[in-house]
Length: 291
Image 1 (spheres, rainbow, N blue to C red):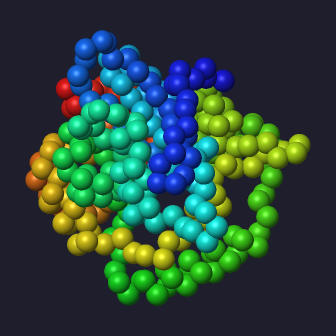
Image 2 (image 1 turned 135 degrees about the horizontal axis):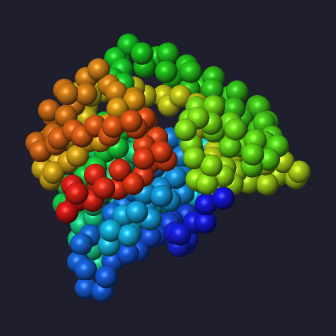
Image 3 (image 1 turned 180 degrees about the vertical axis):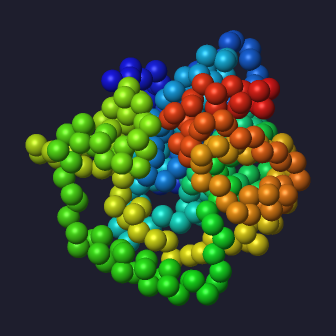
């Protein structure tokens, strides 16, 4: 198993206890801002172990945290759910604790974390110096006519999840095998670390740490026309990093054009989980952009 290099802590923000990781390679007097990494759906902060360590070796301070209901951060309270504005409010509450005294941070969001990063930066543009979106230009655009079906799916999915007991995981090896069903390129060292950190012992077996409600469909639709106003407020440089074999959107160019200052870089050979499989190349690309 990979020996983790991050320092762990817990902080309370927006009423929830958040699990935080830190990789600090800054020299004394280095005034460059902290890099904050936002993970994706069904992922967790430990997913950035290789990327965070590489950026720290390049002389940067890097922090990440588990979003609500993921990893070791508390789940939404009873009766609550997981909406994008909840994640944005968590980021707004966490940043003063993650980078105290710093007027700005550099923000990197992967996948779902990229959507959160865009919304937060548009709402708080003075808080972010530079923005990086790793496979993070948002989910597919959906029309309003799909809202009713999404709401029905939400209601049915929540009811079904609450009535269905968690499926036990036999071991860390079993968890790793399940993770590789979707991501067969997950390397052994990082894979075993994530399989351990993303599960918790329950009797003789294990189960996923994340709230099962994350597997349900949210009662909303993603609309690019609603994103437009947020992106227009992002005046700082933005970099979109796409995997050559990643989840590419048909309207990728249209979304990029909504930013006042954004460019696209394609990572050769990488898929959606580029921070797992190509951390050195991703770190080099990010460090060059952030300066």
